[in-house]
Each structure stands twice: as C-alpha cells, then as structure tokens.
Length: 138
Length: 411
Image (cartoon, rainbow over all chains, first blue to last red; front, side, top):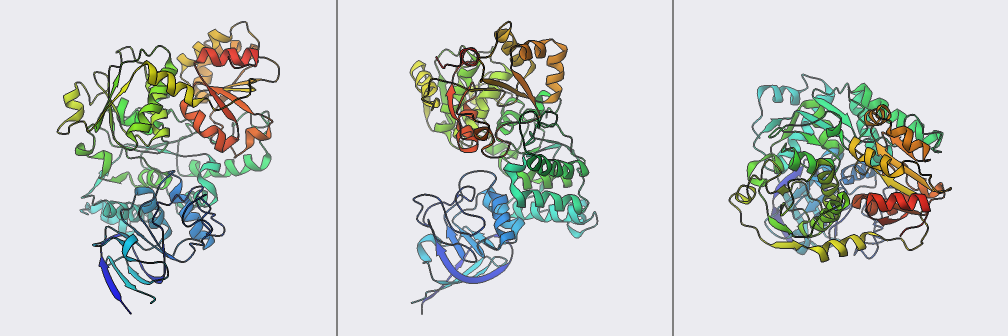
C-alpha cells in the first residue's frame, strides 16, 4: 500500500482523518451545494450529485459569492460540511468558512494535492503540523 | 504573527468571550495570509439582509451578541431585508419581517448604527485617505478604496463583524502599499454623456479586470461621485474589482506613473463608442415590450439623483400597474421631502423605498407580487434581479427608464 506525505501550510487548525473526495474544478458553496444534504448541485460540475459531508474535500480553490463563509458555517451546523479541506491555495472566503466552522484545512502543499490524491484514498490531515498523510486504497 | 500586548490579552480572554473568539478568527486569517501583524481599523460596515446571510449566518451574529460582543469602532449596516416603515404596504410577510427585526435587534445589542444603506458614505460615514477599515458590500468596497483612498479588503460578514468587535484586522491584501498599484489599463475613448454610461464602463471593466486593479485613463474631470458609485458597483459585479484608479481623479492616481508605481500595465483595453454600445445592449435581458417595474438607487440614490428623477416625473403619472421605486436611506428621503422632491415623486405615483433593497429582501418576493420585467439604470441590478427576484431586466438611461414607467413600454 503506497503512502505519501505532503507538507504545507495551515489554514484552519485541527486534525481529522477520513476518505478523500477530489474535485479538479473550483467549488462555490453559495448555490453550488445543498446545505441540508451536503450534495453538490452545481449543474455540470464534476461532483454534481456527490455528497461531500464528512469527506476530506480536495479542490483547487473556491469561487463565487462572499456569502460562501456563512454557507460552510451553515453546513457545519447541519453536519453536512466536509470533515477537512485541502486546497491548492485558499481564497479568503473559504479560509474564513473553515476557520469559523472549525474544519481542519491546509493549502500550499509541496505537491499538487488535486493530482496526487485520488477519490477514495485514506487521508490523515494534521493542519497544526501542516501535514497530509495519504494512503492509497489500492 | 506579531501581536501587541493588548491583542494577546484579547486572545487570552481578558476582554470577554466575543473579543476572544473574534481575535482567534482574525489571527487564523492573518496566519493564513502570512500577515505580520494586526492593524487598527477605524470603521466597519456589515451586511444586514437576513435573506443574504442565511440562518447560520444570523446565528453567528446572534452568538456574538449573546457573548457580549460590542462594537469598539464606528460600525453601521447595509440595507435591511424589509422597509422598516412601509413593509406591510408593499406586502412583506409578518414572518419575513419578524426574522429581519430579530436579526436587526442583534446588531442593535452590539452597538451597530442602523444606516441601512449600501452608500453609507453619502450619510456621513466617509473614511479618509489611507485609513484602514473593514467593509462588506461589494459596491461600497471599491468606492472606499478607490474614490476615498481608504483601505479595505473585500470582507464578508465574519471579517467585518470580528473587526468591529476587536478594532483590528490582519495586515494583508489591499491594506498593504504593494498590493494597491494598477495591473492593467482601460483607455476610455467613448464620450460618456449619461451617468449610466459609467455603469456600462464599470461592467466592461469588471469583465476584463476580474480581480485585478484597473487604471482608467480618459475619464473627464467632470466625473461625479454618483457616476463613480455606479461604475464601481458594476465592476464589482461582473468581476470582483476591489480597487481601481482613475488618472487625474482618484487620490492614489495623480498621474499614470503613480497609479502603476513599480508595476507595468500587463494589458490595455480600449473602451470606445463600439464597446459602450455593445456593452449597454448586452445588459438588457428582457424581451417583452411591457415593463411593470422601474428601479433606481442601486447603489442607493444620492439627493442629486433623486432631484433628477423628480424633474423627469414632474407633472406626469405612472401608467397604471407599473411601479417605480427609488432606493435610498431614510436620511436622504427626509432630505428629499424637505426639498419638495418627495411630493413630486409621490404625486406621479412613484415611491421612495427607504433603508432596503430588492436584493436584500426574501428571494422571489417581487415575482410573488406579480412583477415580470424591470427597467433600471444600474448594471449591478441587471445582474442580481433575475436570480434573486425572477425579473428580467431592461437597462438604459434614467430618462429612458422614467419614460418606460410612464408609458409601460420599453423603447
């Protein structure tokens, strides 16, 4: 079983482990995700119909409205938010959402997470140390 | 991050739970963006429409109030989701009104001033050159940064509220000199005759600049605050323009060299008669000839704009079934009443709608009132009115919109 360790930069504190869900496209939380179910609803998005609740969500960057921080916060209340987040680079709206919702999050890793991590991989995310341990499921 | 003794005490809980939680959030944001320190901010501006912040957002704000959060700097509000005096008249439900009033009350508990406007700089909240502030509201942010020369990032509610409670914001982004220089040039060769021509230019600029800093050349010295208000709002809608410079007009651009500083413009876009015409046409999305709603005051109208609308409406009557709303803060409505404009406007069958905005009201409210097609002189309004209220827009000059309200037909 292959294991890689990526090192990067803390966005929001905490530790979490779980199953990776990877999006190669940016994600908008306002109008892009159903907050009550955690299912991605943006038309033609590569994750359309997929539930992000509890997953370690890996995506390049956020997009869209400045309401996004509060949408993530609302999902955390409904327990539909991702368990952790890994970005290429965090935009202030997603970063603020992770911080106020206590969702561990890292960015600027020493390898491209969207490329190196596959959906279904087991991920140990330690935001305080800035490390991501990825164990391939195969 | 290097914190002062007082900032460390905030973080340790010496000033209570709300200050502690706010400082934790701001430090986390600062660390995320490699800010070296906190800076003191002079004012904050908060979103206020209950339908914009959502249930959890409202709860976040309520919890800050419950934890004893108090604004330590001048802090005021964006438009409310209801017209505080006439909400029953226009058909807002008891439930929506109650939700908004509860939300507003949490702001009052924290010592927030109810400016209830997206143009608080028209009623006395005017940051000065170089002053650091923490403002929400996409149209106010470029006005404050560009026209006034103060400094703010594009804040969401959590960023501006935590700044209000601590008086601090992390030093990154548009607070720093090196991030305030121009990235690209927009050379204006079109003759800008009407105020809405500036909104058209803003829409064009936001599309090409996206989140970069555009520098405008060729804008005449006669450009007014009203023109720049419409322009910045449009640029922050079609793009996420946070700061722009107008050479010879705005405080950080006495010359083109000053506007670009050590940078070189990466690109130059020309805005000529063709771009003016094509952009204006692209903003009208409606197809029906009939117009049943006309909206002015996006961003909220100044006293000068209200005078101009009153002159156009003087002695006329709106076509039956058509409504014309002028959005403005109550303060400016009282001014309009004193000047006699309110009488003229009401005699024509139009309304000054205070302290609110259809984009802050409950989603689908206007469609529920039976409206289908709106005419407006605001490029920003043309973008949000359909997803938020289900109305298709016509876009044009103030005169053309008033004419549509009188005839009921878009020409």
